[in-house]
Every structure is written in C-alpha cells, then in structure tokens.
Image: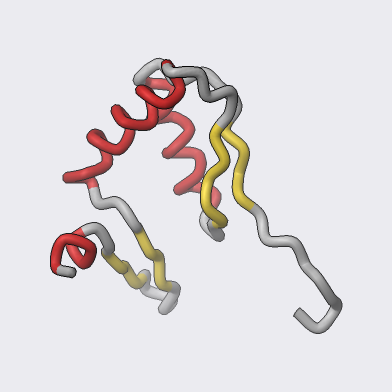
Length: 85
C-alpha cells in the first residue's frame, strides 16, 4: 500500500553501500512513543530487528534513553546455521 511505501526509505553512500530505514523521521517519534507505552505497560526488554550499521542501533538506543525508556535494548542477530551461509 502507499502508506507502507511511505514508511520505507533507502540511501546510498559514495561507496555504493545501501542503507535501509523502515521508519522515517516523520513517524519515528510516534513509534518511540508507542514503544514507551509498551515498556510502561510492563515490557522488560526490547529486541531490535537485525541490522548491519551499528550507528543506527546506537542512535536508536540514545533516542529511547532520551524519552525515558530504560529497559535493556538487545540488538537483533542472525544465527549462522552452517559454514556456507
């Protein structure tokens, strides 16, 4: 849908690396408020989606801390199931 398309954006740096953002700034604060409501309702931790750019994770954690989310924020990982990938 067009509303789902609006929630995604892509960026390419000078080296050709592509960054994907699933929640642009216009929705980010609303999503953080909703996440804080979940924590205030009793969530004990947060697990992120898998990511490849640590800066995105660090910025997300900082944004959470800035609005008062203090529970652990666990980075999402992908387990390697075999040597060939």
